[in-house]
Image 1 (cartoon, rainbow, N blue to C red):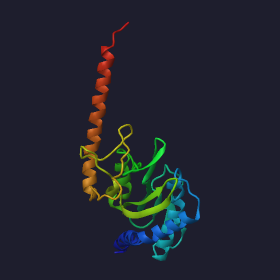
Image 2: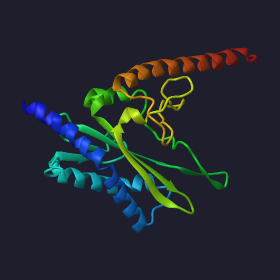
Image 3: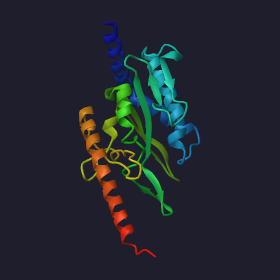
Image 4: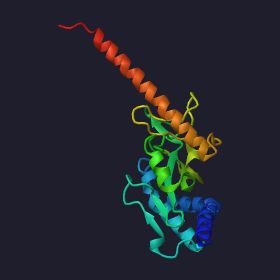
Length: 229
């Protein structure tokens, strides 16, 4: 019975954060209006303020009593960025994306910030450790360029709802290292359940492996065709 109560507490904590998206957004807007952030480093610099906001909200909701109830990542190589030590524990990652990018000497509006959403090989381990339904992203969308600095939106949702699909209908990823990529700003999630994500993960790993094998075969073939001296 106590275990079930703690499990409900985990779900209630996430519901509380989802309900507080507007409050988090308002706080970040206030911070951006009072400090001088650079578009180059905003995604990293905002994390300490985002941490402050969610700790405050979770304390007010009774989910955090003292510093032993949560842990903050010591560096960017550690997963997750924020862990709420409920039963089961909640893994919360911070992501952010700029709707403006500086390209070829001018600012342009983009549909996707191409964030690193974790590699294909990392996700089975993360899911095994925390349980896929206990991993969430807090995604901050902002618009920074040489004219404007504003935070546009904050969304709290399961991690897989932010992952995009490519034209081949497998998970969107970067070829060289298998880093997953997000869906476009403001679009509905293509992946709605953990099972759907896990099914797509397996298909994507096989798809990428076949592409790598095919590319290496072509390299070997071309090498074999070079006349030997």
